[in-house]
Image (tube, rainbow, N blue to C red; front, side, top):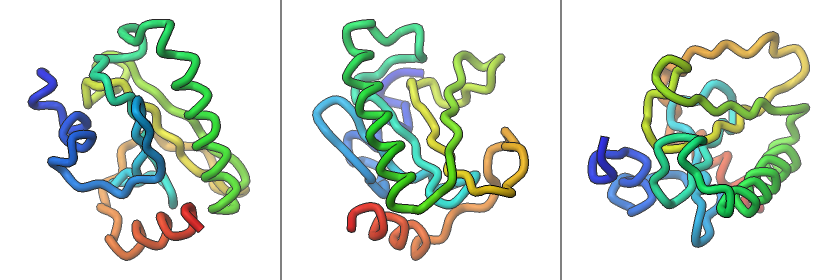
Length: 137
């Protein structure tokens, strides 16, 4: 898949709308529109890397600092008990979109085990807006 065909590159370029939680020069965090839980967030580098093995080590330090801070922000603002951080590499491991990305999946006590099946129900726009409002307060 080329960068021109990549859905995440299109989101980064603003060709496809998204509900942005955080953005800087090198990274974008936005709400997943097929969430596994309330506040499910996708974090992507703005440079197109196929997967984790393609990201140069020099870019990792700042990316992971931002990923940590975004996770902490979601935890605080949405008042969740924990979160799963999920990242798949190559189709055999479940990677569907070939642009490096991490999922921050908010969790509450009693949720049960995380089911690694993509959400099938698209989030309602009002719900996405409410989550953005809570996080940006």
